[in-house]
Image 1 (cartoon, rainbow, N blue to C red):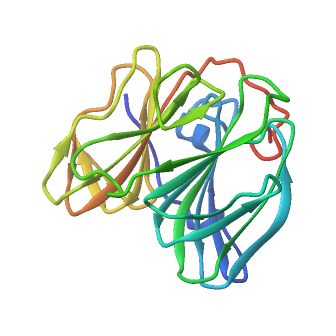
Image 2 (cartoon, rainbow, N blue to C red; image 1 turned 120 degrees about the vertical axis):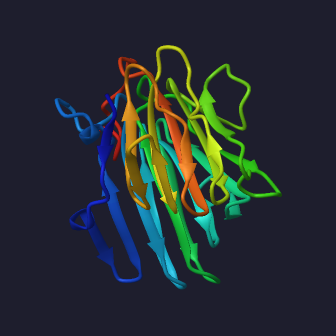
Length: 244
């Protein structure tokens, strides 16, 4: 049985030029006791107008993937990084004991996901990772963006979670990534797709925790982000955002 989580405008809030629609991935499950989907805790679908400044602030014990779909954002942190993020350059912050950072959009507007994952344990070593892909989002093929420790992937997560993305051309089809024992949670970043009789538009998500999702077909050009999550993974609840 598939579960669908529709885009909910009432979960959107604004801070001037900074707009966020906050998703609790676990709400896709009808009998969820936790609003997290296993260790996948919070996903913010954010738009930042030109001139947005998210001032210096601290995170503890959050695994944070910054996934930019369009535009550019400048990341700065206490470790001395000053990096322009874009669809061609993504970032993972393993906050661990502490990371201080700020984000700004001085040149162009940005649309992105800020993804908060609960780490396997608290107070791990903090670091910031970057993934470069000069060609941007792969067309009609999935790209692994992040994976658990020990897996050969561009970005490393201190948790049993895989993250992939794809841009589908109109009428293209794709099998959804899968891994034994992991539940699928797929998000429509942009566009419109069908899976059997289910039609999903921008901001919708679909999941299967048993038999696996069917082939997805794009009704128009679409960008999809897929998470594979070990629902029963041990996880810390000490995170600034992910632990809530």
